[in-house]
Each structure stands twice: as structure tokens, then as C-alpha cells.
Amino acid sequence: MTTTKSLFAAEGLDDRSLEFLTSALEKNNLPGFDYFEFKRAVFNLLAMQLDEAVAYKSAFTTAATLGVTKEKLIETAGYYRNLVGKEKERFDEALENQNEVKVNGKQADIKRLRDQIERHKAEITRLQDEIAGYLTQIEQAESSVKAETEKLQKARTSFEFTHQAMLLQMDKDVENMHKYL
Image (cartoon, rainbow, N blue to C red; front, side, top):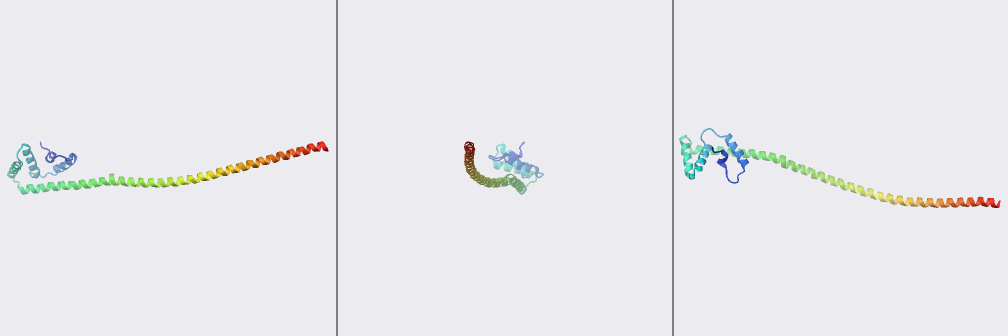
């Protein structure tokens, strides 16, 4: 049994596409003997190693006994050709829909993500600048703390020295009072 797919098979054709198109031909096969059956008859005759011209003439002779004319074969070939053309339009539409979903949608996602990355980079730059400002404030505060600590320590040392000196003087005065008075 000759399959519809084998009628149109040729080197380099996409098997899935061929299956899709020949399936559409089978589903929409016109009743009676027309181009579709003529094609099958020619294919089978060529498979028997007949010359191409002989195969076409033999298939047509058989078709003519069924009342089929050359014009009817050409007309129905046009019908199947249009059918394949409509399948291409449906395929193109489905492909465009897939393109919209799988390509354009993903491209929109990519753009959205790139925009988000740019916003994050700007936010990171802003935060880095803020951190640098805080680090500068910390350095200034640490320098100020160190200076104030040294100043306070110096004040404490000076005060304690003075305090001790005064206490020593007072103690010496009290001692002298005991001694001289």
C-alpha cells in the first residue's frame, strides 16, 4: 500500500512537515478519481520501472475510462495545491503565534530583566556612594573621638597632677602648722 507521505517524499524534506501536509490532503480528499488518485497511480507505475511519460499516459488512460479529463486532473490538482497553500497559511499563523509567545514574549522578559538589572545597578551605585559617605563620616568621627579622647586624657592627667600637687601642698601646710604652730 502506497502511503500519501511516500507520494510526496523527496530528499531533504522535513518528515514532520510532510506528515502534516499529507495528512491534510488525506482528510480533504475529494470523492472519486481525481489528481490525488492519479498521482498515486503514476507513482505505482513509476515504481514498476516504467518510463515517466508511459506512466503518466497509462494512468491517464485508466482515468479516462472513468470519465476523468485532463482538465479535471489539472483542476483538482489546483484544489489540492490551494489546500496545501491554506495549510501553509495556518502553519504561518500558528508559527507567528508561537513566535509571539516563545520569542517576542521572551524578548519582552529579557528587556524587563535588563531594565531591572540597570535599576539595581543604579541602586547599588547609590548605596555604594551612601556607604562611602558613611565611611568618611566614620573616619571623621573616629579622628574626632581620638582627638577628644587625647584632649580629655590630657585634661584628666593635668587635673590629677594639679589635684595631687594641691593635696601635697595642703598636706605640707598642715604638717608645717603642726610643726610651727
